[in-house]
Image 1 (cartoon, rainbow, N blue to C red):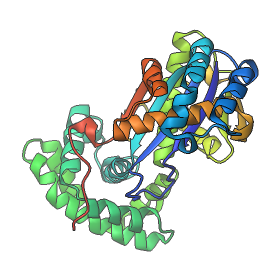
Image 2 (tube, one colour):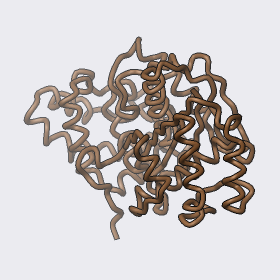
Image 3 (cartoon, rainbow, N blue to C red):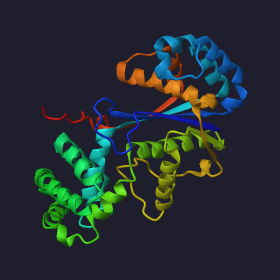
Length: 344
């Protein structure tokens, strides 16, 4: 199978962008090489759209409607399927802060007994999401994750912890002695005693994550599941030269290699395990999108799906793609909540 990837709402460490609250990542997973076998269809679409390269943002709904029948035929004939990962950026910051406090891998004072109890951890995380305001997440991101000064990060982080522990844990502590014990340990922890560094180590590690990397991990997992169902290895992956796919791929592979030694359900990468065997012989190609019909097709499909997701506007292309689409959402809606809003 052949993969073609595109993204929208790119952030890296820039989370608090009110104009782009979500990061989208889409892959087209095709049985055939779209670039090689559908060049005639590509030329026809370019002619109908009167352009030199297909971009959803430039074509708009009117332009896409002109070429929808051509693209739909390419999708049908190539046996393409689509995987869309939609990550709410603010939820990512919340999940990262939660793990920085309650994941014993990052905070040695936290409890494995509490964190590994799925029900208890989910209750704790749900309560955390309910009670953590926008300003706390903003402070965490701007003062603890982004800065390079470890001492300043540590001081800011412990200040945040005090408020969170006083507001959240007591609610559950009276119901479960394990939480009560963890509250005692965490409340008595001081920065000077944290010699392996909740911030200096844990938060520096967190800088390697982003909504982008989290989405890539989810997407690759879904792609491998689909490839195994179709009994076809993924032999080629094409991505635009502008994104950081290879960096994220390396992080995902490293996480996957660590799973057998440390099996657990990770809040930041919500998968049961990473079996990347369909990617074992994949050739990864960074391409200029102007030279790759598969990436252009993915770009136009992603723009159409994003319009449908955010504005409930559906063109003929999005309507057809939705019959071949797997969507993975990463956000507050999973817990029946809305994202916190800034005061004022």
